[in-house]
Length: 306
Ligand SMILES: O=C(O)CCC(=O)C(=O)O
Image 1 (tube, rainbow, N blue to C red):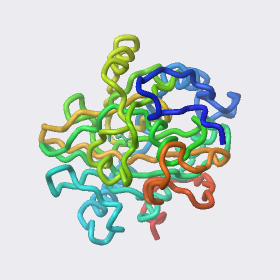
Image 2: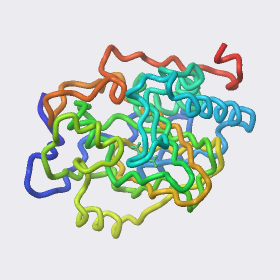
Image 3: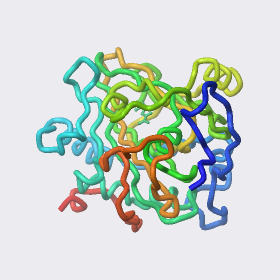
Image 4: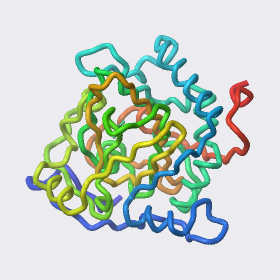
């Protein structure tokens, strides 16, 4: 397969044109978001849906996140990632496969229908994770384009995927909310440097390869500015797979917990990685036959876990 987004090959970083649409679906009156929201997503590369889940649903999801965090021994070992230099949990991967509640959340029509519309296809979960940024201890996530990594290390062919960050704790300006560079999704910034074998073991804690160079990042930030959407639990931040994003550490006493669900178009399933020999493991990047999501209706309650 031709590599139309080559990265980590050349000595110098460069901006390549994006060769894929941002909104793949055709907007009409039945679309799950308004025309204005679709235009915003196309232009900015992200969209915030406020209070998508009710207070009861939020409490239910928070309880589930609490269960996952409080009993890591019950989870698949590899999926639990600690903060660098500490035993605090940084991320739990594959949460949609380890929790019926999260599986139901991922299929919820309020999320899945939007993903299906924006990607213009049936969708499946490429990756899911709970990113817990504990008070005082939560470390940063350095700037990156998800697509750069998913393309080079996982073999995602095209820009036809997106993430949804479901806020499970209040994201304030101070506790390390997600930061995005609006508009940065419209070009592909290549990275410099070869990828070491089993790079994921290190990069899940702190990323050193597949990170953009500072000059290019500065150029993007000066041109487009930086936003950091804040919000109450129950809000959702949707962002394109190629938008430049990251987040600061959390030195406040207020933990930040966000569940990330990555939807990929079924037609965009993974091929051989474009930049490494050995693909990353399944818990980070689903490679098997895609499990197409059938959108589920109705509120999130205890019954969905029964
Ligand atoms: O949790 C965050 O603040 C950032 C997460 C992120 O960038 C990622 O999961 O790719």
